Length: 466
Image (tube, rainbow, N blue to C red; front, side):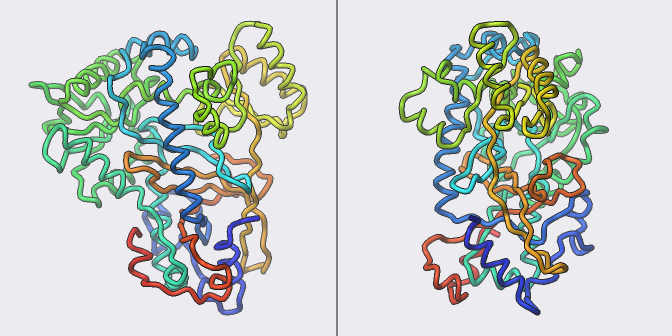
């Protein structure tokens, strides 16, 4: 069963002559969206505010648990952390250690709604997290259509502006270094602009539109002089780190400059968004430390309940033949159709094997390869089907939605969804994939009012965050 606002939207869209007809975010009216190369659904995802706020409390709680694990389990020793996670020791040397204060909350979870509640599939807990270039603009663009603007006004819909919240968080981070209006530099790794610049220029434009002085470059363009970090001749207050440890650990100049940035951040001479140690927090094996009873004795009873509410059953496959490892592999063989396999340091849908999409031979091969390098195996979460009405065919078809939900120091910070026709795989390049923003609606309303469309309230109040 989907949410009632989706049912109401589809019902109104299906009426002959509906004012909701004609919504098209791929039109020439939105060059900033079409220029990204994505395709968009003609409606957003809808969530009740109470459900999102309950999830927000659980999300922030489990993120705090996640980021506390290095200190809880390894006394903040980066070398011990890397050894436990199977991470290259050279990365531990570059990280140096975990700071006395935890980094500002920032990241994105990938989540499914299973029909009862939101479940976290994995954490993207460092500043390389993408998607901000489209989640807010895609939601805001819907208000350019009179039919949707009227619908939103009648039913109290609003969306969270992820970019505005990010700009506010960067201002707060820079305030400790300089005046309230910091200079921000989005910094890629060596050669990173050629490979990824197209993905970050839209974010630069959005942050500039929020009033931030924002520059874009590579780590080799930086230098440290007189205790401050400079990009060319511009003194930088906040370095928004787009590069990861892999991009710099094997590059002599990159490694040296990353170390200088780390030291400048620790000395308060620049704000590093986010510090190098957050890359270790993004390792998928941490999910097993939260989920596996053998590994989570450090959690209180209430913390375990919190984890179990939002995180599916997750176990670690590690190199080395142990009795537990052999038992786990046998369990994975028996339950193939209910499990998904993820390499510890994979990203962007790479290194993932869905047990229900392969045969026994392919699954066995994937298990052996994963166990040799380190991976997690996770209980499959089946997303609830999202009914999408097609005005051209007059049919309502089921789609699956993978949600990208952001957290920031202020809390839940909006997000968006990738949708595919039910049963089709979620991949970055999928021709059938569509993107959609997220709108929230007030829960405290009678179902009769929603069904009849008689809700009334001040439109300005309802859309103030849009």
